[in-house]
Image (tube, rainbow, N blue to C red):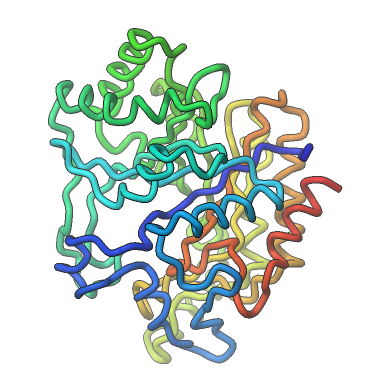
Length: 361
């Protein structure tokens, strides 16, 4: 299928039990636990969100992984970018689904990796405290080498997504630690030594925390702009700020804004048109399934509004070289963040249909 852009969708592998989650939240916990217990917190709040075609799947099941890939391919998505968790000293989490994809050769669907180099804290993952669950460490060059060789079979896989002949590898917090530069230098050297042309490093730039120009100036090959909170941080009026704060205090309503309004601020044209700045498509957001009344909620997202957003994003990359017409889709299956493309009971496949219509029309 010929499309107008290279759409690469973020893929969350946390849909199978692991011992750590059992210890933190109880036996059998997965992301479905948070998604399933969500409740509407105000009038018109869309919760809970219930999966349709694929059901409450378990990613240890090969047929599920194949069904996801077949569906993504049918609607114009080039591949998945799997969240990859390496906490230092060889500690990994939730690696089983991707390991099985790699070792089995199935599904035959392109992929790449995004290193989620972040300390896990309770609040972000569904607890009421901010205690550290798993700390991200940077033990030194020896560990960076071990990390590289752990990932090398994936980097050499024929399915691995490349840019300029190099495997694409994203770093979630590109400027969080000075050691990230040492990490990249180490990997680039090892890549050449192991028959690769290098590594194409992409820095994930979420709102104002990591600016694309700073990321590019610090040795990254490209930047992924993700402005999920741009409206909330920079464009609300004083009246809106006061109203939302009072709503939160007196009515216990989470910060909630219309998707139609907020999505206009997901892009910054003069920045996203730069050849190696890759914008994001965002179908929605609702963190309340994890964080309750503390989370941000985008209300009234519809396939029609999403389609207009996709059009705006694709317009940003139309003049770029084909290889750089990359758009990251956030996300394929972040159900507990209300941020997914998989069919649900309310909309079915209409978000996927909207995406495909813009990609191929």
